[in-house]
Image 1 (cartoon, one colour):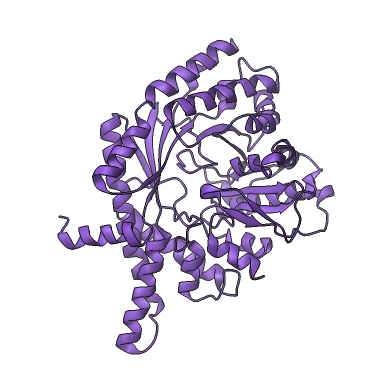
Image 2: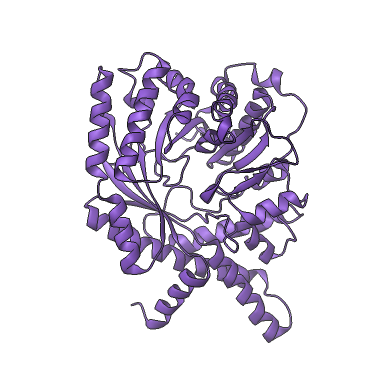
Length: 463
């Protein structure tokens, strides 16, 4: 039973500590839209999305008003479009036509983003997959709300290095095609290993083939709430014992806070599901930061005790945070999925930006941190003249971390055309701004050009 103290506590988290529901994402299967005729396929896609999602934005706004819980984004994820367009797309331009249709549908229903301009190529590429991948630069240049993701590896299959190498070129081309907007297209493109079917967060969201025809997934947030709880914990410990709280108290505080945050998301998810008459899927527990002051995962790490993210101890602090968030969250919802942990993007987190500018945080240290957090190298701006083979090498490294550790990893990296180390780039909104980070100058060209597939690790063989 909810008591008045919990009501006041939740109100305080919303009003003073940046608690929000980051997204309500409606997953929609488009498998039944496939047709040999491209125009028919596009018509079916548009009609299905606009029919199912016509009330999504209004429902989110109504729930936010009635419950007093900010719901920042309303989004759509769809079946990986390479599966839908295989019968009708003969050239990359055909996929671009589908992208324009998806963008038109997203604008019609009013969602912030639509994810699923995607292909799953962890073991190999079909002709349809390759056509879609080659269409990505043009598709992201001529649309506003489309997000693209490519899964290039998994623990079960290994890493498709042909796809990794190709994605190095595609990211460079996307940067060039959108250079008038500081290569913004790359902010809507992510390369994954072990991509989940039910992730509600962009740019990696797609609606997996194992999902129902339509589903409601909710992503919660609240780094500011965790930060405030830790500050109050240490304040109380100092008043009581004259020293900061120990690790046991620290972990208990994070778990309890994650539980409260997730319960808010569970309430919103159930209400949205009932009102839209679409089944509830999962709650994603991820702590997703924003550029707002006080809404930072980096600040939580500083509360735990590191001077800046990147200092010795950062990876251990992040591992602790991620684990306790999961432990608290899974007690608050029966259906937890997606990524569920702590995001560490650079441009979207003011504390991470500060750490980069202070010289505490490098790409190499970020890579080490991704071994224990939700995703991977996220929203990192690098010099525009970085070679495609170097970008492919970075993708391969991050994919290897995911493959070996049986976790989702990702690379969303932005080679900003015309920018170099020392410059900053402004993306705006939730994407924030980012300093251009230096990249290792030594070549990985011979490695990524070998072709073929890196085999799955021995622990993948569990049948």
